[in-house]
Length: 226
Image 1 (cartoon, rainbow, N blue to C red):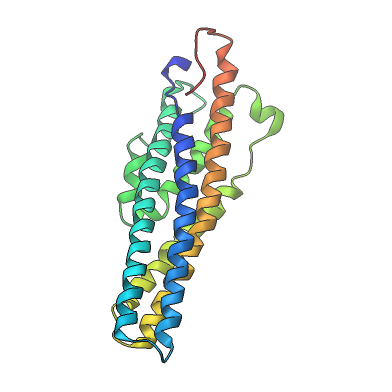
Image 2: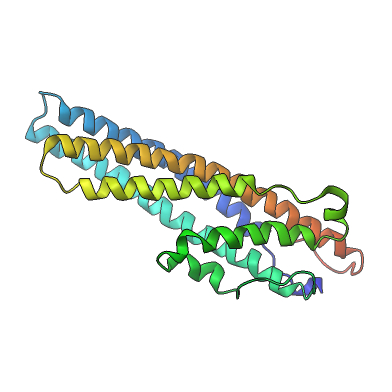
């Protein structure tokens, strides 16, 4: 029954808003990293310059990390509810592969977090469509290519930033500069991941709204998903 489906549109709007903020802060952080790397490699770099540039990159890093944490919290809240709603459909044609808790927990389990969030997102994408009466028969499934590119960018971002963080502790000037540039490129890779996530959340929200609207006529007292 539709009254068992929890509202998710407001969560989706917050996710999109914070992703856009994160993109802006990512550009600032990546630019300061690259600038500091170039500055370190120059012959004019002094201890006073190091202090000032370190302060600048530290502030931009804090802004970036805070926005990443906020994005993660709001995305996982949206993600879990979208998956939880599959469990609430009480439709024999939609049988989720995992429990609701895995939609949040899978992000925090080493190695599992490389695959399971991706498979759950594909399940949300496909099963929400299949639960809309007649949609798949009329239009077929929308391809999951978007999800694949999103996940590839996300994994790539994590690999590059991991490499950069390992090199960041080196005392060699060249290694530090390389670490900063690798980190800058890595942060920039999070931008296409964020843009793809925005599109993915928006399209999934369209599916969720279609699902609701397809059942609303049977219960006129229902309100739109908020």
